[in-house]
Image (cartoon, rainbow, N blue to C red; front, top):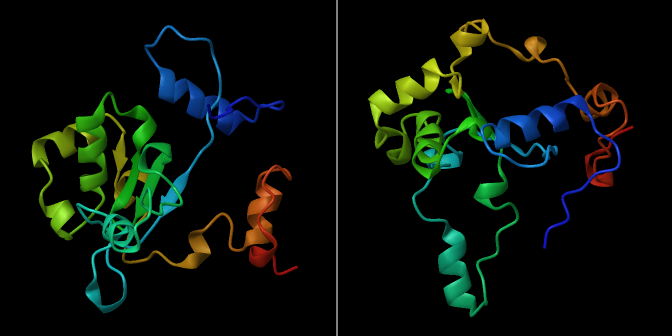
Length: 171
């Protein structure tokens, strides 16, 4: 089993746990935040959001027992794109989770297949937030608006709880 216990509780870890287990009669616990930050389109206008991961094809071609996946979708708690942020912890089920993802997938085929009414409902409930919902004018958005502008800033903001791999440290 995945060990999900923790010796020290941070406010963000506790809040994520409350959001993930709201309405469920379970022992209180926190949850690790797994934020996926991605632009909706990659190089050469390839969509970042797809219906089927290429890891499946790679596994089949290479004769692998399972697809080579670094982060499983059900572990992701938030997705941030230029279209907005989806807080997947607040979703009540798989259908809402799917539509929240589609809701921030922009003009990709995945995003265009969204249920517009459901996505607006998710936005009304705060599961999806567009830039304007949090006071960001996309026309004026620059890196100056970021709370953390470097990996070192992220470590400092976490109070030392975040310890990035050496390859991401430049200090």
